[in-house]
Amino acid sequence: MRMIDAMSAAGDDCAAVRRISSMAGLTPARRATLDALMQAQESGRYVRDIFAHGDQLGRLSSRDAAFALRLALGVTATEGCLDDALNSHLAKPGKVSARVRCCLRISAYEALYLDTPADVVVSQGVELVRSCAKSASGLANAVLRRVCENRTQFLSAEDAVDEQRPIVSAARRSGLPVWLVRAITRAHPLESSRVLAAQTRPAPTAVHLNARLDGSKPSWLDQAQPALLGLAGAYRVAHVGAVAHAGAFDRADAVASDFSAQLIATAAVAAGSCLEIGAGRGTKTFVMQSQAIRAGLTRTHVALDLYEGKCAANARRIELAEYPRVKTAFGDARDLDAVLGALDREAARRMEFDTVLVDAPCSGTGTMRRHGEIPWRLARTDVTRDLPELQLALLSAAAARVAVGGQLLYATCSIMPEENEGVLERFARSEMGSAFRVEPLSQAPAFCLEPFRHAADVIRGHEDERGLFHTYPAPDEFDGHFCARMVRRSQASAV
Image (cartoon, rainbow, N blue to C red; front, side, top):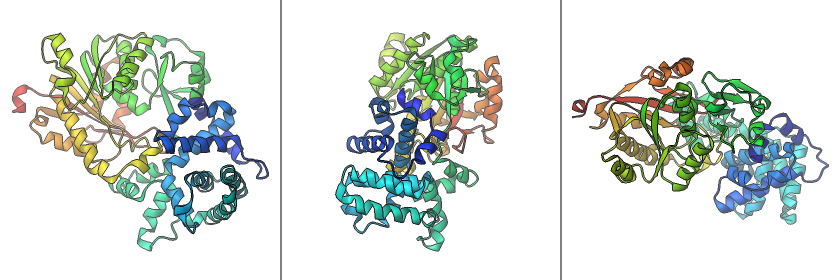
């Protein structure tokens, strides 16, 4: 909770911390950032999880906690670019210890992406290095001064050859790998400038309210300064820390969920039976159950994930929310006969569902602002080969469990066409895919219901000519998501 509380304090408070006098000693925020980044590096865990489950933020004021989190997430997200900037001023880059390099990255991030005054960057950077390697403080002083002096030239990629300068500069300004910037630019020439501009800025936060609280005005929601988002239960919050501090997430009074993800989850709400593949800890499960209650629908829900622990966490939250029970199943969804075997035996038949949602594992390129590890852990072949193969296998297996006349939703939080339209086109060419027709997401049954009619207009604003739903991360806008909705035709048409 303290991590979320810190996130809500970002902005002016972070700017105030950055302006600290260069004569001061090392600030607690920077020390906590170093500790968290080193823990993440040594353990392989996400830095966000280090903060969420550690006590680094608990030892800080809310202002320092906000700054530490901003630094840690930012350094993680721009790691490769920071190393490029530092290495250009290091005589022997390979000789710098991991901890000293981490210190230098923190200060270089401030210089390149936060506009922290140069004297503060150098002073605090030297103090940070001195705290773990006194003998390297002189090196830190020299290198960080050069980084500050050459900031404009580095971001403009003046060291690159002329024909590569625009793409290298775009990569450095966004903090992303060159190959990924090139891929985004090629795939989305009209959207790429906004997508890249968003990468070094915090993403807005949305929550979804427990349906049993509709009509009430929880004080924690008022304190979060909510704004309605055009979907029942969905709010953009200015201070998500107020929600966390009040225990709303712990009580399942709300979940934090990107607005586009909430729209997709609502589209999967319909009478009858639902199979949710890739449910994780159940954020979309919560949204779907909430919306079913608002719509007065009677339905059954099976939530499936690869990991048993996530299934258990999902079930616990649904119970806390006082929602109708969901059944859970865990295992590899490429073999649904094995994973759903117990449920099939219980039903005395091979179960088919009126709605199947495939929330596919993906590159997460639509959510890189929230998950800084993604761009520098992602490989080109993940996007072009490995993930699409997995996604197609999951979609094909899921399709076999859709009842005639039922709907199949395929969703990712990726903005890469290989994982979205590419998978959809390959599925359509298959024998199983020929049994389905693509229909607009905005025409899902849920959006004919009174609580969600306005949301259909919101979705239509993000649909292409086929009715495929796309959103893109942009400054002050929500994350990038994709969703295709397909309806199964008669069994005869599948032959």
